[in-house]
Every structure is written in structure tokens, then in C-alpha cells.
Length: 156
View 1 (cartoon, rainbow, N blue to C red):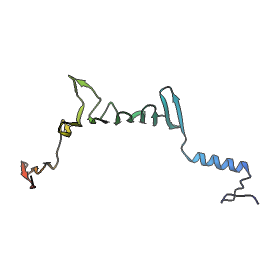
View 2 (cartoon, one colour):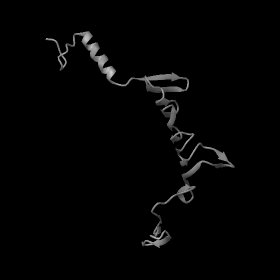
View 3 (cartoon, one colour):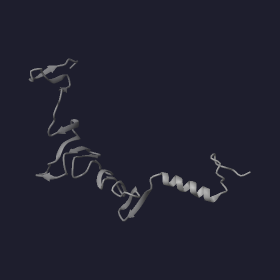
């Protein structure tokens, strides 16, 4: 007695098996790998504007633009627009492309770094919607729009 699939397709029928395999293959999205001197780019067979570029770093591409890259530096967002860069020494937040003027990053709007006081969060501008607290002190807006500094209590 021949062995059969649960849908009773005879496994000794190569044409039926080939047909089943082809149907299963057509049901999944096909990906291709383009190998270049700089690594590999894995993307859907019908769309090379999205995918993953693998070389020394890994790059995620969407709509033809890099949206994230992972390596010695991890970058989330497009390098010519707002993005975040994570390195071993800290985290940088950019409003646009990385550019220097007078030795300073002009589009870096904030960063987290470690110095002699520990980890610090620097930002060029901030909008605090409700309140801002420093240890047991809190800046709060009053009903009339004024701002007050209030001691919130504690052991210090």
C-alpha cells in the first residue's frame, strides 16, 4: 500500500509532488540576494527599493533610502534627515545631516554621554509640557500661567 499525504495525494506521483511544491513556493514571498564586491543585498524579487544590505555593517533600506544601519555605530533614521546614532561612547540625536561648523555639530540637538559626573543628557532646546523635576524640587505651571518652583518633600 503506498504512503499518502493527509489530502490523499500519492507520494509516488512525482508530478503531484512537484505541483504541491510549486504551489507552496508561490504562496511565499520570494527574496533574492544580489552579491557585490561590497557585500550582499537581500530583497524581495519584485522590489529592490526595500531590503537588507549585509557587509561589515548591516543596513536596512526602505523606499530606496537607508532607514537604519548597524555596525560600530547604529544609526536609526536617514542620515540626511532626523536620526539617532548609538555608539559605545553615547547616544546622539540629530535634526538633520551630521555637519560641523567651528568644531561643533550644528544639527546635533541632544546627546547622552559620560563624563566625570556620570551619565549626562544634553539638549539644545526642550519643551516641557507639564512639569520639570530636579530631585525633590519641581517647576510647575500655575493656573494663571506663571511658573513656580516647589519643594516636593523628601529626605534631602
